[in-house]
Length: 159
Image 1 (cartoon, rainbow, N blue to C red):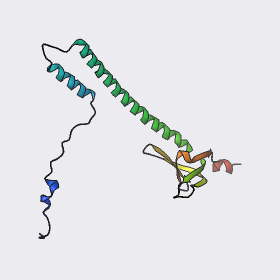
Image 2: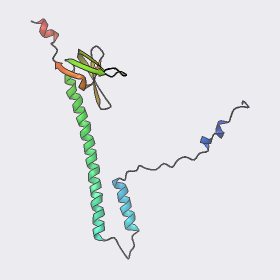
Image 3: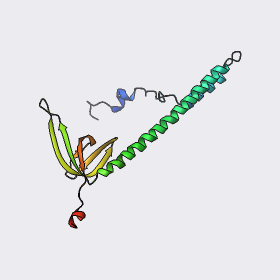
């Protein structure tokens, strides 16, 4: 061992206590039910929980459960919408598109590029759709200004 080196086991990070890890900040329906059960078990026998308070807590519990179910349903709906969006964008494959793209430059006026190309594939990543053209250009849906149907080679060869 070199005399100028420090033994790694003596580093301060090895002596720091681990941070306490707790659950999330969000109370779920199970947490609410535990609180309600604890409250019922530890209530003062001379002053039991009044009916109206108990009914109000049960209504709150029911509302929380319905909101949780609704949240799950909305998540499923969003996922289905994203899948439908990808399927609908598949119609662009094989079609000629006219596109434009604005590129910002430092201090100068923005540069507007324009062109045409045939969509060869679609990428769907992080809830964003990207059109990939045969020439390698990648475009967002907002960059496409016109869509034309490409004539198939078999139809033109028979004429």
